[in-house]
Length: 40
Image (cartoon, rainbow, N blue to C red; front, side):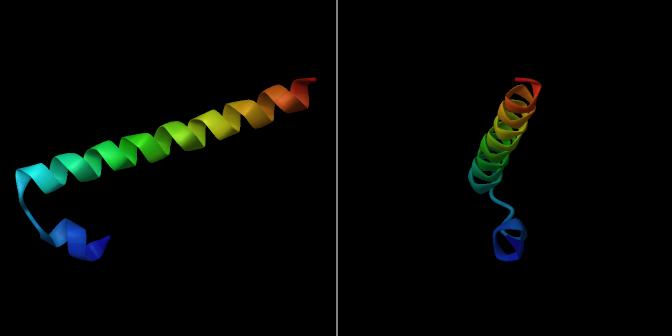
């Protein structure tokens, strides 16, 4: 992660933002599934 952040190319920065957003969606999705499972 540190090595990637040191590279200041716009393309690489955009790709990092996309992957972080994708990870965030996965985390939120898993959290909602767990909460929905507990409600049942």
